[in-house]
Length: 106
Image (cartoon, rainbow, N blue to C red; front, top):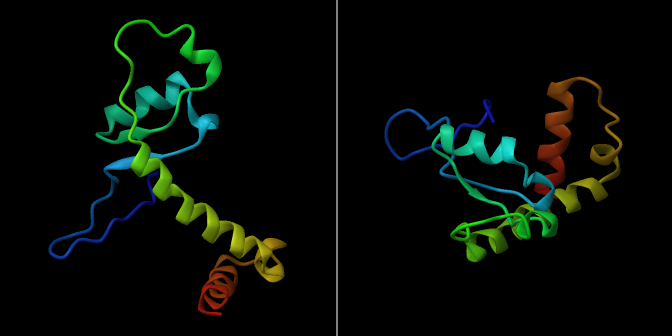
């Protein structure tokens, strides 16, 4: 999360996103505490084993924002199908980034 740079039309890029979307695997108290401490809204569904223990008002969950996460998942899945990227033939970071960019261009 510290490497995130969100470009803006003016000024320096933001270093924190407004929201972070994740699947149920990211639904842990430690992650849910870390996000608000850094002014990031969590778009993470509750795991089934957490729902029965939760008391009080249900947590907000933005279903539309969670559905938009599918675009990223499809892009990552498509990149993994590119053999050179999926198996990481290029060992240096610079060459690997070049291969990712070439795969996106195709």
